[in-house]
Length: 270
View: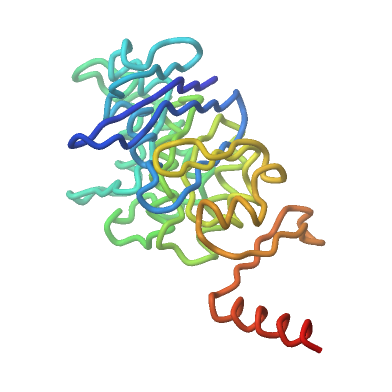
C-alpha cells in the first residue's frame, strides 16, 4: 500500500497547524514521524486516517483519494491504532480482536469460521493467545497495545497507522511492540517520541516542526546534532552503535553543557 500526503494544510481556531506538508510511505516501508510536542504529528495522522479533513491538500492510498472512499472501504485499506484508543465497555480479548472483521461485513452479517481463524492467527502473531478469554480492561498497557494491533491485523489492511504506540510503556513493552510492528512487513506510518527507537526501527523519518516538514530521509541522513538542536532544542552526540549498527543519540543536559564550556574555557586560558 502506497500512502502519499501532498501539500496537506490544516487550520484550527484560525491558527495554521499544518502548512503544506508532504509525506510518503512506500509499500512495505516503516516510516517514522517525529517532532516536539505540539508540532503537528497527531493532526497529520488524523488527517491521514480521516478524523480531521485537511483544509487543503490531498491524501491518497494507492492513488485513491482517502476522502472519496467510504469508511468501510477505508478500513479495508488502512488500520489505525490511536494514542487515545480506549475501550469504555468490557470485552474479552478475543471479542476485541474480532471487531476488526467488521470492515469486511455487511450489516448483521454473522461471523464465519474464516473470521475466527483470522482472529486466532492474529492472537498467535501478537503473542496474546493465552489471554483470549481475559477481560481487555484487566490487561497491562503493553498487552492492550498488542491486542489493538491484533485487531488491526484482522482487518487485513496493508497500511497500518499508529500514534505513539509505545507512549507510557516500560522499555520491555516498547521493544516488544516495535519488534512486532517491524515483523509485520506492512506499510507502517508511526508517530514516535523516542528518537532512539525511531533510529533503530524506521526505514525513513519525517521531522515535523511547527506544522512543517523540517527534514526527511533515512535515520542516517536526518538524525544529526544540528537538526536535533534546531528542532528539539537539545545538545546531543550521535554515533553508530557498535552492536546494532544503527545511529544512537546521547543527550546532554544544560548543566553538563555548562560544565563542558567551563572546561573548554579553562583549557583555552592555559
